[in-house]
Image 1 (tube, rainbow, N blue to C red):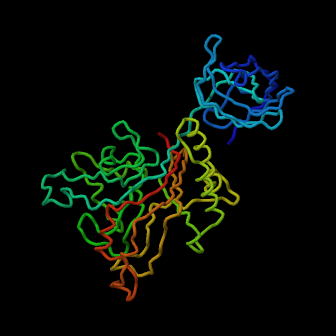
Image 2 (image 1 turned 90 degrees about the vertical axis):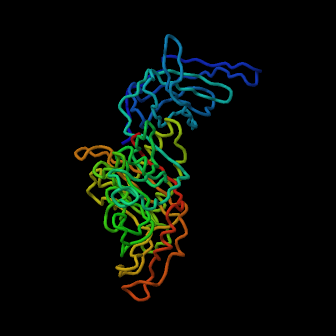
Image 3 (image 1 turned 180 degrees about the vertical axis):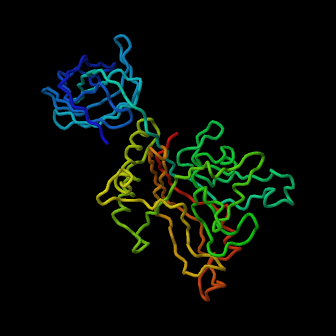
Amino acid sequence: MKKIFFALAATALVAVSCNKDGGDDNKVKPLEATLELTTSVAELPYGEPAEILGTVTTTATLDSFTLTAVQKVGEEYSAVGEAQVFAAEGNDMKVEYFADSKDMTDLEVVLKAGAQEAKFYFPATAVGELKGTFWMNDAVMMAATPKVGTYENDPETYPVEGTGAGSDIPSFFSMRGAEVNGEVKHILSLNDAREVGGVDVSMSWVNVLMNTKNNAFIGGQRGLAFVRCNSLTAGTVGRQCDVYEVDGKKIDTEKTDNAFGISAIRGSWAGDRYNEEEYKFVDKLFLDVNKAETKLEKMKAFWAFNQIQAVLDNATLGVEENPTNLSNKNMYRRYVEAGQTSAKEAITEEFRAGDYFIIRTNAGTADAPQYIYGIIQVLQLPDDAYTFTLESEKVPGKMCMDIEKTAELYEKPAYFSIKTQCVR
């Protein structure tokens, strides 16, 4: 929750004005003003918003307040955080400031009124630790990997135990961030996922077609899907080839991000499965958080995405009256019941371009969970409409996906925009 610190009125220890070189028109002139804080800034929560209140006495009309974490050495102050600018409305200062540096010794407050300004300094420190950081990429490409041959499923090609092929196709996702050879990665290949032993790898983008252990075609399900890593070897997924050991490295499904879950937020096309209020909330939050490059931007983005838990998943916060819960499933298929042999129900489309997914995992422990959240927006999917045929073996006239045409979906790019809280 937002932390507000109330204290007795405090006045700035130092008040100075600043002059810049150049002509008179460009010169910053001294502003006659006093600033009295009515909240304590002695200890500010690191990486979280703190409401800071103050009152300015001046005859000038204020334009803005600029707050910056600074470090004092001798009599000199140097910035150690980013300048945070707030529009002034009258002479009362009411801002939500993020302490973004553990090196700060003071908080600098700059009052501006036209070409005039005054600076004030207050002793301040940032306390506590970050609960996480933030990662986003507006143009993520992922593609489903074809069957990967190894000694286990293709001994003719790889007759030596523990040998086999790899893949550099970006088909895996790590929500927390997986450290691969010193680099934190969120989009990984099979080779990357093997390199880290599956640790912190959350899910894979797959094309369900056959059991990659015995090459038998899967009867009831077919087509593209998001699948949590510990479900890759499920009978209706069939990605055994991804977990076989090669050259001493493998995806250990016991060590993958098995707290990870995914929840669909469908658009209006979905009929009675469309929740307008929920969709608009996710859409607005996703669009509002549009930058996460600097430390401060990541702090603000992380904090903003806490709204997901508060609004859509507040049962995890202990809310008992009218609790909200995310479905947090282990997989989502593009289509359900699209198989050719044993599927009996009509095909159901589960998601399409324009839809969102909420993702969640536990960055804490089972006893002390710390849930983190993210959003995936589906931008573009491979054209799979042409794969449908009317050759169901169980239900005459039932639509299903053709085997050969479904196989053509391997390696075809899908595009997503992903924004997520993370721990690295």
